[in-house]
Length: 219
Image (tube, rainbow, N blue to C red; front, side, top):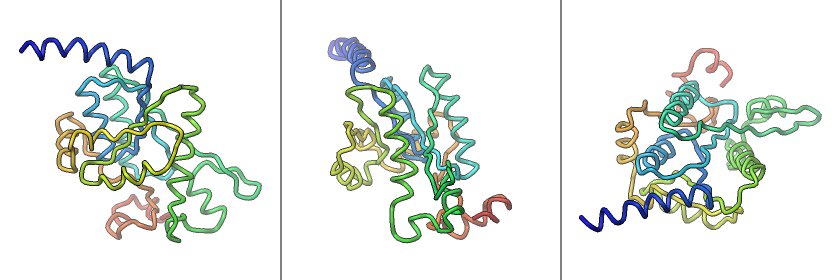
């Protein structure tokens, strides 16, 4: 008992220090893993300086609904609302702010259709890094939602120097997919499902058919 009692104030003090000296920023994908990661961080009382979502402008309607619900959930618990960032780029002389607009203007499919991962790099990672640079924060640790069933993704991510420290809380805590779903249910949130552009070439037929008619036509 004495060990538990002694450890609690130290943990609280460490949490307070970390919030000031080493900002913990969540790279939020709005899917099951990253949602469960944030839920567990909140449950453990860990400090979070920002939860950042990079919006391609073409997420599924359910994802935008989830973002609103989850942002409210965070604020109600004293955490920051979700910060949304977007990429701006040019196709010829035309400025575009969504991946869909870039594809239509350039008359081409998303990069993943040609075997490239350029969608994520340009429309997710770049705006996130740009936002992080603008904050001017030093000693930032970015939390990424790879779960305990996919440690290889963390190993691959560590090969690239992004200019900030990376942390994989779900792997730290041994939380796989089942534990992630359970954490979301325990938090009383709607399960977010898959986060992806509604017109992604990797979509399954049933995912396209489930879209509202207007989005189905655009996809």
